[in-house]
Length: 206
Length: 301
Image (cartoon, rainbow over all chains, first blue to last red; front, side, top):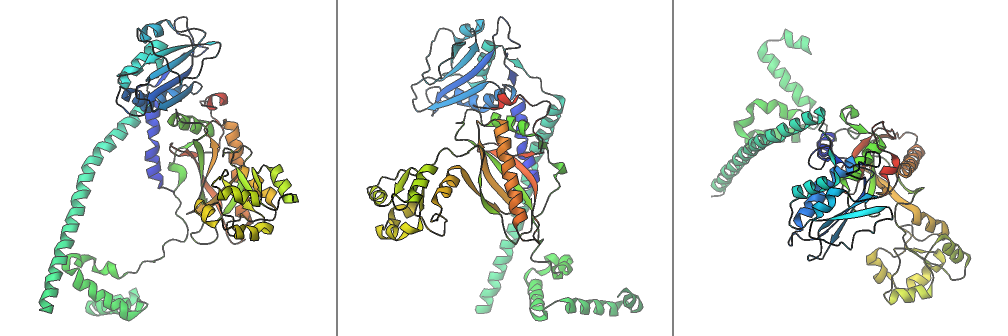
């Protein structure tokens, strides 16, 4: 099995799952307000390649969805990658009972239909956000505005941790240079010796 | 030794020490020649280190796999680990993505390894279709169908395979049908697919029915470099299902370890839960902590 310390360093990706853009809690049934009803499900559809404005949607899946899933483990999230570049890049948000007032405003004038999204249940209402040609940060701000998700504050321990990891990665740049120089020096010397030995051989045979 | 050293003058001491060195070498001549080569070879760059070279290290190294102290490793309760893994695997197909378990053993580098098959209370693999080659109408054929084999028979199966219709993932054979199977010369068709039954792979068995059952819910595992790795659940499993599977696995491995030779001592040292795309979380044996979410939230997609 891989070295313990390597594994521990790798495990620090946890921190990225806990904190960052998208680390927010959706309103649940208990915390739903009049303005923002509870979010029950999310569904994301985008196409395989990035042209046609599908890039942001995929980055949203890569960057934001893990954090959302971590902080809202009960909210079901599905992703469908299609091969249809002309098809929609859309995020369907399923609300319990009714759609939030801001969601319809955010969804705005362009109405998209996403045929891959699962059909809402009787008690669910959906709002579809068009994601084409948006960056993932823009998508996140739209999602946050339409659902009223509250950001989770980064704990002090996590901030410390992040600082430590950043310091390590900064130090790694210098270390890498140093080791590279050392290895090069060793290689140079070996080559020099090999050449010298070759000349001795030549003299012997001559 | 030291008493000699103090009694003699310094020059003699030097001689003595050189004698001691050459005597301590096991085989004198080759060691000496190597020594001389080294001096000519690396010339003066390593003059200071010259003495160190002569000390022979144990070439075999430690007999046991090295065990790091787990005190430094952060460990998780099952539900917490699942929460992280589910976050890392978000948006993946929940039947395709699997939870995996890595069980690190405390064991010697040589000696027997654990190798066995296990049936989980909650099947991990999605249905695999099994073909059984045995005389049609026999008792084995009926049992095999009852156990869930898709295709049973002799000649009609061969016909289908020759026609290129291979609608199964595993293939078993009964020893009675082995001559017929060899006569049909299907090795060229089934061999490359890894489907050809043979005694060596354990796919030619007397008790076909129980083997079919094993294959349908069974997973083969083996120890490699002191680690046993196997998938133990789909991403959609609930924490309770995963716990049941995990418990079965660990019990079965403990039984295997106990069943080995008396002198061989194997024990479980670390259990790591990971997934198809996620990172590995060392488990601490707890089921859940106060901060972990409801088990219902950790089920499904």
